[in-house]
Image (cartoon, rainbow over the protein chains, first blue to last red):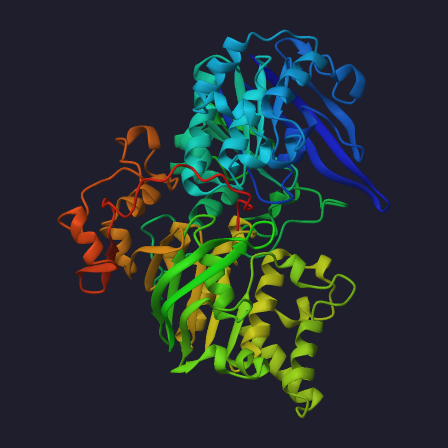
Length: 316
Length: 318
């Protein structure tokens, strides 16, 4: 088992108290698995992604453990995490444009980064990886501003995986790109896994249809908790959590047209405040099938092969 | 109603404006009352520039934009123009001043356009405008922007536009920053406004959103129209290789990319639906009508050499 996360809680410190952005999350990611992590803004998906690599100053590790290939990640300890960071866990940040140093040519920047980690990199290996993501060697002689957004994103992907991490976290890597570069970048993620440069991957996104294209499993978060995790095909065709169902039916697919009598509808209401969230199921105020028992938090239980849901009515 | 006639936009770029860059070239289309036209293109295609020209935020370099047969650049009072034409933009959060309550945008409309209307009467108008965008006035009035969600703010901006006697709404990427669960509600609003007889220009990079709501579609690439026509025709039977490759790149929930055969690249010179030979493309430029209300540009001919991925400074999600 590559990654095992048990009851992870990460809160944001604010003047008014703790914002419970990640409130008890338990899941595993197998070797070779690409897991899509979907959710809306404020669902905690980015917090989860960040927790596995680096907590920023406002984030506090409150409880729970993260185990990667048998070793516990000291996620609350920034200095000790350094030993794992980029060697074992790596990240592709959302804004590749701001991840690159504008004053260095790409090749120089890569050399400096490798030197800072004390690793020697064969130029041939770097070139092989550039070929893999479909970049020409000339990019090494270019400044970041000379590259298009899709190219920069792919440069960052190469840099992030230079040390062959066991787990790669891709945080909204395609959301700032055009549809055609989106497809290329998503394809590159698959190639990184297939070429064995990374063992497993968590792809954080708000776009279920995009992650469905590349992920083996999809996990949906809502208001800091897990709602549902299932193999990608199952989640899309037979979702069991009411939130997942409503989210998927709210997507205007290509080919779906507006009609007066059968318009698609969104999910009314908004997620609960996480500063002081209500007890029980956090979706119950917006849920059409909520009943008395929802005042009690439903457990995240497995109802089918690899398919877990946190809903009292999931079995029906 | 709104008509663009061979509109071009040329920007001066470089240190002393020594070079020029054509952002929009020879674009012609119409938006009629009671119609949603979606303007689809990737970053740098000029779709937002067209929206900005219609909103008079940037002047037209060549060609003319007319609203009900009046050239919009000839309308001397911008205030009168904005009474009829309004825009809503991508980022609802930056449209509000965080220091003031969000409903100040309505008060500003009253000051500028309806100073004679009584306060009670105005409140009634605001409430009915809010109800028309499916907002509960009690939930949004008197709140600060940070207390409202992106979808609520975006709908308030649409309500603000509706308070005026608008005939045309330019909706520039209004959905992109919203969450999936509220997106569709804002999109449905455009259909409600259409039913009230407004013309709407819906600028987007998302093909599925454009397909969902629009009556007609204009696909732009590098400032030129590559294909336009009735939405069912453009999406159902795309003729231009670029439109096809765009459609194939849209992630879907029923088909996986890897199960699909590789489609041709948009840059590849496919058979041109328009010209029989490269020579002919010089004598017959422009768009060809391949069927009723379906126009396609020349694709594989000599005057459209395949272009490499542009080296660009432009921000990606324009």
